[in-house]
Image 1: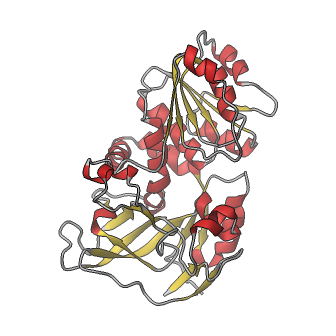
Image 2 (image 1 turned 60 degrees about the vertical axis):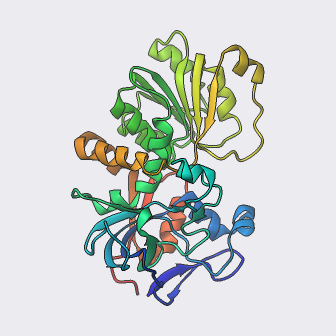
Image 3 (image 1 turned 135 degrees about the vertical axis):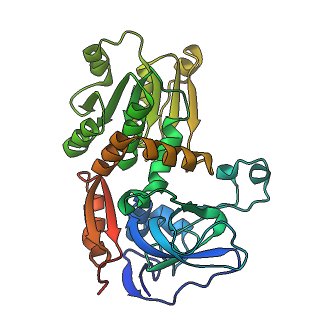
Length: 349
C-alpha cells in the first residue's frame, strides 16, 4: 500500500510503498478515504524537539481520518464490514486507575495513533474495535475525517456551561474556529475570537463569532466595550498557546470566570495568580476527547443541526489528493488556512 512515512530521524516525510498493516482478533481494518492534517503532523514533518523526543522512526503519522471498514477480527462484535467510520486516536491501556474508573481520556499509558503506532496517512489503518467510531447516519467524508479535532473543540467548549454566557476564544486556528461554532450552537450570548490572521478572523465571523479581533491592533477590553459588556467574560477557551493570550484572557474575565486551556504554550506564561485567587477563577487543562461522551455529543449535534454542519464545513478550507501531500502540508503550515484534508480515493501515483 502507499503511505506517507517518517523513515528516519530528521525533517521530511516520504510517500512510499509499505506492507499492509497486520490485524488481530479484536482489530478493525479500515480503508482510509480522507485524512486531516494536524499541527502534530507538521511537528513530525519538521522534526522539532518534541517530535525528536517522542517518535521512533520508521512510523506512519496521521490520526485524523475517515474510512470504510474492509475487515474485522474474529472477536469484533459491533463493527461491520462496509461501515463508514472515524477513529479515536488515543489507544488506552484499560487497566490503570483512570481507565478502570471510566476516565479513559486520562490514561497514563496512552498510545497515540500516528505518534506511537502507525497511523492513517496510508491506504489502510488498523485500530482496536474499542477505538472505532461508526457513523450510523450519512455524513460527509471530509467532516468525518475531522472528528478528532472537532472532539478537542467540543471537549473544550463544553467543559463549562455556555448557555447565555459570554465566551472569549483565543486563537482562530481550526480547533478554535470549531469551538466558536459549537459555542454559538449551544447558546452562548456573545462569542469573541482573537487572532492576528485576517483570513482566519474572517472564518471566525463566518462560523458565528459576534466579534473577531486582531490582537496586534486591538485589545480584548475594546471588544467588551463594543458589545456593551459590563462585568467581563464568563468563559475563556484558550486555543493558541501564545504566552500573551492567557494573561489577557484573565484580565478580561468576570469574578468566578472559568478557563479551559487546550493550546500548548509555546513558552512559559506569566500568570497573575493573585487575581486568580481574588477573582475566584477556575483554570483547567484539556487534552483530547472524553471517551466516548464527546463523540456522542458530536454526532448528536451534527445530526440535528444543519447550521452547525455548514459552519464546520466552512472550517475545511483546502482539499488535496493525497499524492499532493507536500502542497497540502505547506498550506496547512500557513496562518491563512483552516482545516486541510487529503483525499485518498484519487490516484496515488
